[in-house]
Image 1 (cartoon, rainbow, N blue to C red):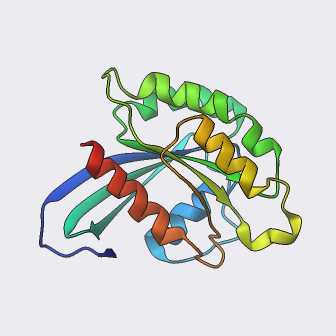
Image 2 (tube, helix red, strand yellow):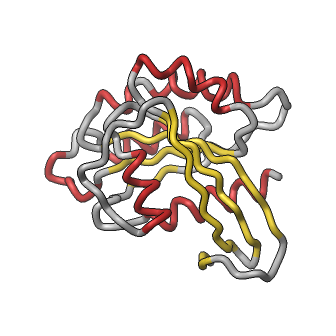
Length: 182
């Protein structure tokens, strides 16, 4: 169950990194989650951006420190230093742009290599954005699920920041996975 913050249960704080190609909707997803607003005119993220939201998952208070990484090639060099110490990750792609999912291995190798020096693997999920544009789909859901499974990711979702479809569920799911992993 997912609710706004209440002061019952145990407290957790997690660093969550969202990464993927430029223009897939990472920033709009975060803005929709944090402020419940869809802004189609958001500017490109330069380097990284940071948001915080407190939520309650199964009577546990969770502070999510959400890091939004710029997707453009020239900013990838920053990902390793910003990703250190992450407790979870979301690889995001655009269901209307096949090129945004084809470099998932590159993104994961950069992210996973620099995240932690521990043996413990952190939970990472795959999220397809812009599912309100079904008529323009170029990434079939079955293929995305298969890619997610083959990479041993912790789950796959599709969402729409515009309509709010699945936004809350995605963050509740990854927060729960990070709790399980802690």
